[in-house]
Image (cartoon, rainbow, N blue to C red; front, side, top):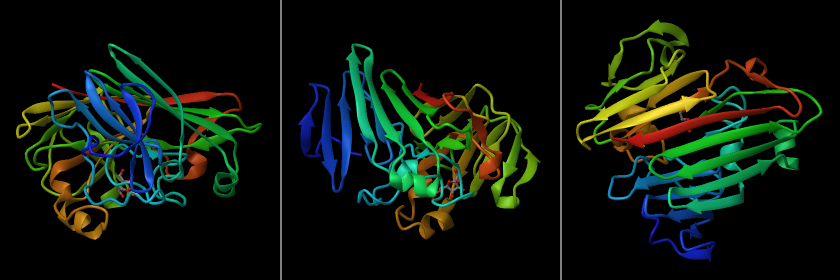
Amino acid sequence: MNLHSLPTITNLSDKVSIVQKDDVKIVRVIHEKATAGIALHGAHVLSYQPAGKEDLIWMSSNTPFDGKAALRGGIPVCWPWFGKIAEPAHGFARINEWKLADHRESEKGVIIALELEESPETLLIWPYKFKTRLYVEIGDELKVSLEVNNTDEKAWTFSSALHTYLNVGDITQISTTGMGDEYIDKLQDAKLCKGDDTLVLTDTIDRIYTTPEAKITVTDPVLKRALMVENSGHNSAVLWNPWSQGSEAMADMPDDGYKTMFCVESTIHAPCLSAGQILQPKEQHVLTTTISAQ
Ligand code: TA6
């Protein structure tokens, strides 16, 4: 995504500014180490491009930036639930406007912090008080941390995902390792399955891997690199690609969009809202994903 051409609203420093795309404000970071963009709508990372390299993140070229719909591509923040276990799908965090809470810079990179708290609208959908912060660390690698705090007087449960769309050269040529061998197949009625150590794709995939290793590696011979995804605070890793039929069915993705994206997600999955992770009053949980290229 070309962040350079977007009109500037405010310069926060010589490296961080707020720019505008249609109805969405974007925090743009231009640092010697990397360039990045994070939409306030959804606290959605749109791009992370280390200096001199291709973007590590895939973004749909025809997703609307109307400040209402969820953005297709990037790193959607799915919270306080993951999936279609309640409405709206993947929770409300990705369709709410977050506040820019902080920005810090050093020679190592830039840290952006965005914040979302309950509002009359969120309380109607999910009747709990909360404070979430998304920390985006942009440097030699990209680290995204979703910190969730229970500010209510009662316990609540949640599930979640940092739903990263990786940018790949050709989906049929990548190979993936490190996801573990056990998965719940969402395409086979949530059947528990065993898989191989190395995954090569020839068709759509929608799997929740339940025993991922510390590092998942996607080897990409076309872009001549390997992408590494390291997650923490999760209970699973979701791998997803909609393939041609899925892409064609989505209005916010080009028909051939599936060829250059692959979702590798840091996930807390739960089959229903009440089975999610419990957070007591004043407790905090942090879900992270760290993405780098070699
Ligand atoms: O993470 C995989 C998944 O849950 C799939 O089942 C698929 O529907 C995808 O996310 C995209 O969901 P969305 O609501 O963004 O269309």
